[in-house]
Image (tube, rainbow, N blue to C red; front, side):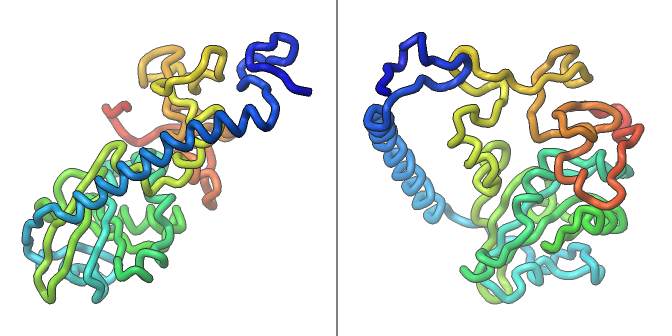
Amino acid sequence: MTTTPDDPTTALPGRPPIVDLATWQAARDELLVREKAHTRAGDALAAARRRLPMVELDGAVEVVGPDGPVPFLDLFSGRDELVVYKHMWYDGAPHQGQCEGCTTTAWHLKDAVYLNARGVSFAILTTGRWDEVASYVAFMGYTQPWYSVRDADAPVGGSMGSLTCFLRDGDRVFLTYSTTGRGNEPVNGSLGLLDMTPYGRREAWEDNPAGWPEAPQTGSPVGGHGAPICWYWRTDADGNATWGPTSRPVPQWTRPGATPVETLGRHGHHH
């Protein structure tokens, strides 16, 4: 049966209008023109990144990993390029008290085999003390290399929560690119897939049609009762997005011993 988008007899509340396949294909083709323009604009930005200047730094700066202090140069593992993610850290916090945004990014970067195949090494850097970091890495089941840059200056250390790229020329090391905030999104495949779905990410800032499901809400220190919450921050044991004393970042519930807890372990800190 052929229907029109505004046909009240077939419209489903809070869902896209129902049309026949040919009408859907025409709308899809129209959007494809805009998608291709977006892709080409991204290609142009990537080309501009490749033309950025670079800054030399001391590759002998020591970072701390499972084998103790090593020079930053070692993180290249003999390759010419290196990408690092700088993971925020809260000293003394239990596992569920670490940054849920950084947890999300790190979880989507569990394996670098395709980067390695292209001649790019990958590592996660954080300002945590190595003993705390090692415990967290073991709990989360991460296999990518982690290092503490607690005492290192920028650009090896410095502020966390960013993706940063480096280039090696023999024993010389150079900073080439860094991004943060939504600039980190390309590594998170879940966000890209959710952007393709009819309900999207279900975050409060999104432009949605009337009647679409609202973003998850919480009555919490985030902003009082009914405040929007970023859905990937934390969940309770039942998988509901929330911020509370027994919630934790989503992937932690799959880890051994990830039972509800009574404190987030971050005194005086609220998102």
